[in-house]
Amino acid sequence: MSTVASGLPVGRGLLYLIVAGAAWGTAGAAAALVYRASDMGSVALSFWRCAAGLVLLLAARHLRPRPAAAPEPLARKALRTGVTGLGLAVFQTAYFAAVSATGLAVATVVTLGAGPVLIALGARLVLRERLGRAGVLAVAGALTGLAVLVLGGGDTAVRPWGVALALLSAAGYSAMTLFTRYWGRHGGTDASGTAVGAFAVTTLCLLPFALTQGLVPHTAEPAQLLWLLAYIAAVPTALAYALYFAGAAVVRSAAVSVIMLLEPVSAAVLAVTLLGERLTAATVAGTLLMLGSAAGLAVAETRGARVGPAVG
Image 1 (cartoon, one colour):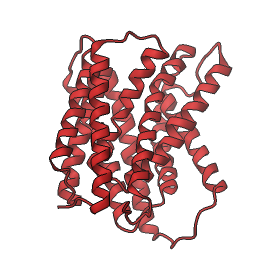
Image 2 (cartoon, helix red, strand yellow):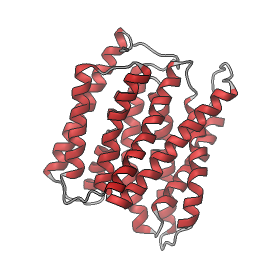
Image 3 (cartoon, helix red, strand yellow):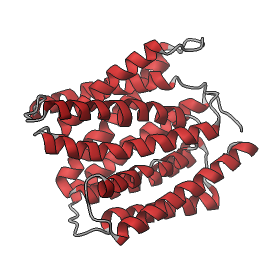
């Protein structure tokens, strides 16, 4: 299996991304339980998620021995940290605003649907990467499955301002993915350092909005709330983003965007099994389409890794 500058095998990078996508999907169910147990707002939850995740990432970074490596130039490190952190902040904050403006279904389908398209275009123009015919079919199948999964369950209302915010969120996610891949190809990246820097910037960006909304929630079940916040900080945040930044550095950008669409699949499964939501034909069809597309693209990616990177 071939590797890139970071030294991580492509196959392992794909596994990291699959785990990260599945873990991201559990955040929605955990957030729904947080809202049931308290009056915490979405921006405050996002702030605590990032702040606590940052603490866990810093602790893991100091506890885990790291191999000796050449020091990264300060200017390059600052640029990488700033770009990924701002991309993450825009991705999360604009998405929450889009949900408020046009509803969860439309915000989700526009953000996650536009992401692979923007990333595929950026990867082709900037990184000279191409997916090929199989990759294009996988992207189309994944986007179709996303639309069926999210929009097939009921009435939706499309509002232009909300769509614009969702596109801004997709742009932040795309920039974060493309730059991570770029730095992975040109000298490698410290995945844990990237995650720490990104969360430090995002936490600072979210703090003023969280203060406006209220940082300390009211709850009759403080123990349950603390356990839920700890889970959100540990699994779909610290673990998932550390794996995401490591995998995104070695896997082609457009493939990353499709594999990460496993997030709504994981969320849909938990919504049915844990939260008692109704299992619909749209949920089943959308889930199967997206899983099939992600699996097909993962197979194509590992095959391509054995013969060399697919570049233009």
